[in-house]
Image (cartoon, rainbow, N blue to C red):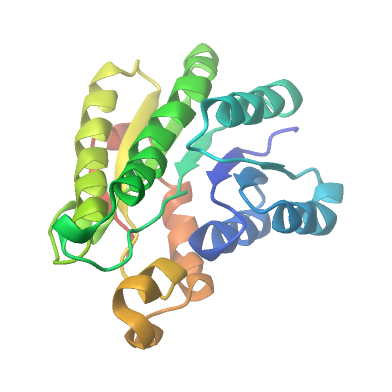
Length: 229
């Protein structure tokens, strides 16, 4: 991969992940990532694969899927310099006692266990390389709360704690940060806000400032809770 920095993005086939993928390509990174939709993954490979970027099928809630994803990237590309745990989901608006158990479990499986699984399979190689930044995507609702999204709030608050603990475990040269990306017009925001989400910035607009911000995070930021400008 030469001297180009490597960024790995989960949930890269839509929303913020897709916008970041194109933004990091334009910034000169080698971009690798995963998404659940096979057609979208194939489309990204068709558009960007010839330039050395690679995209794979990935369901972060499945340990075997994460293991296969990490093995391919580490074998073919190498450990990432920047690991962006972006994949996530939100529950349908409902008071907590009316959220079905299966839906609550799915939010936990993706938003908490999925990030832990990605860390499990990538961080040892990053430690061996002696460098790397892990960015776990949190939310404003990981630092505050709102009605009818209690499962989502719970998982994002958990990511804040998980990230701080991880930061204490990492050796010098590595860092873990929790990132509040802000309020962006994504499918998840529309699930919570409906059409009112359209008054906020698009993922593409957000990425114009977020990508340079993410690229500058370094080991001195370890343990911080950051927010994109």
